[in-house]
Length: 465
Image 1 (cartoon, one colour):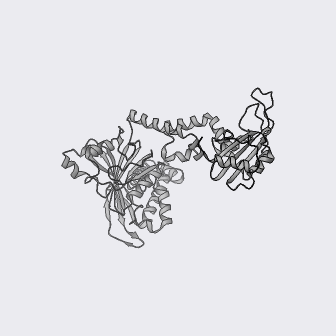
Image 2 (tube, rainbow, N blue to C red):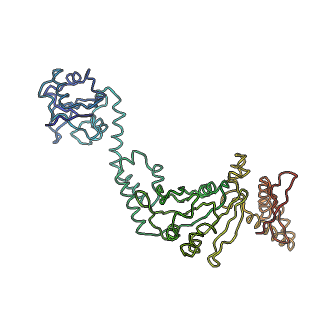
Image 3 (cartoon, helix red, strand yellow):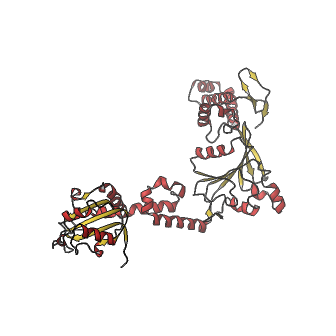
């Protein structure tokens, strides 16, 4: 037989052959190749009939500091005077795992009536064997708990657990223990998404020159909505290699020469999912939102490519619902109108995100401002306009019923006072960021003066919304 080498091994023999505690200790004492050892005398076990006593025997677990051959083990036994028929080749056994072998020493997880459960004090070792055996004990318990495995598999099937948040839901130990079931569940999930071939995805385009904060805006937008996001760039022909099922894909600084129009149509299709090329395994992009950032405005992005290919660019626009255009001061929002095939201006916001924004100079002020006012509306001129309009309506109603208006004026919880407070807070915030906002009641317009810090007010411009 070949002279096998060992890093770990178990030697089990009945005491009647000379494998006594004294001989075991003599066998391991002073042997430099032994890194760790643990052994126990089993003298209370019974045979399978649970009646006949089993011959007392000793289990010795060895972990070597280097590879040790079978011949070396036999030579060691001979050297210290162990009987020749005590340690033979068939008594040197491979263990399933080191921690599982240690766990077996006391039989605590055997749950068989003929296997006596021994006290941990009966184990002799030169290291903390209980600490290492605990992992095997936990593994056995987890394997017995099929409910946890089923829970993980069902959460993957439902989409609650995805690759990007796997570590948030399961421990590294569970991942190792249930690795096969987890891999199968993810493969099944991918297959089901391919077969279903459906999604409800909204596409958002964010344009603006470098430094205005396009990517920061995109990430903060995701955070406000509590959505996970994956950011990618222009990685040759496969920018989605590392997508792991996040809610949002942010395609940063997207060039308009990476994909042909036909591929863009498939990539941005709002209702039908498709497989995208990746290095190793093609990806199913099953996201809720797809955000594109570009230095080019949307009406210039891919314009030449579509013209060259003879494609109708309206096919692209129909897929992109919202277009945010940013400069260092403002963010304008446009929504695609299916009837006119045009992007209609809907709102303007303060830009608090860019490297060129004055709000970046004061981090504390920026964080406070962002947390208080961003949300869905950020600081919306249209929202403030609506407040002024409603205020005007209440004034007209007050002209008809003076008593009710006086009562509302006195009531701090009335709609009138709520609107007054909201207008005051919004105008103060605008002013604190260099914009004086007033309402022209006759023309029903919001007028904005820029760069108005203190007494000096620069010439302004009017925004009609």
